[in-house]
Length: 187
Ligand code: HEC
Image 1 (cartoon, rainbow, N blue to C red):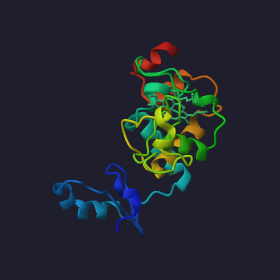
Image 2: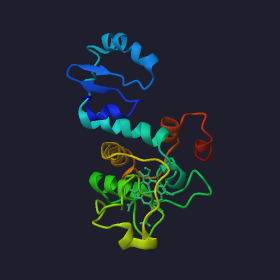
Image 3: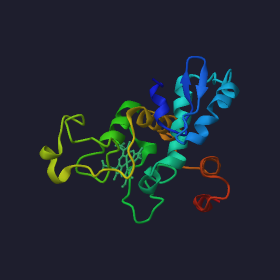
Image 4: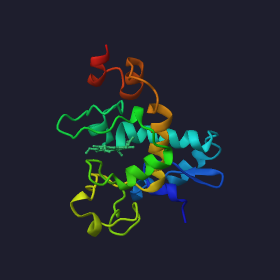
């Protein structure tokens, strides 16, 4: 069995001593031996927390829709004007654990959707089901996230945004790239 991180195709996963790229297509699978050889001795020396925050960073920038409602700077100004306004995560008082739970479970009675595909089918979220919540059940997000990905995202949010003060141009360029129209307002 491959370790659990291998479920996500674009992320390197770790086996004892080596990194293996999990390829979905047979074509790439054929090249995996070569990759294995290249990857040998290439296992990153970064501590696990930094690695996770880095995965979270990539998810925030590219693989999730949080920015639509929360804005690229997580300050609650939506990137997508038609989206509902998200909370200002720069001023959140929540911990990594609480943020991860909010991502997976959403927030009942508000516009914050749930990213755990099975939330509210059983009572894994706040001990509540959709039968109990009725119209207050959070809507299902456009994508699904598993716990370790929600954890990585939460780690990035706390390390990067929480208590960071107002967004800066340097931060925008770092996250979104110098060409991004998102940064124009800060120039
Ligand atoms: C459709 C819009 C929408 C999307 C998409 C969305 N959120 Fe939210 N989010 C909200 C709203 C609205 C709230 C405020 C809920 C409330 O009123 O308490 C919120 C609240 C939160 C909170 C609680 C903040 C606090 O301090 O109480 C966190 C954490 C959060 N969102 C993270 C995320 C992350 C991470 C993503 C992406 C994986 C995401 N959200 C995607 C709308 C959204």
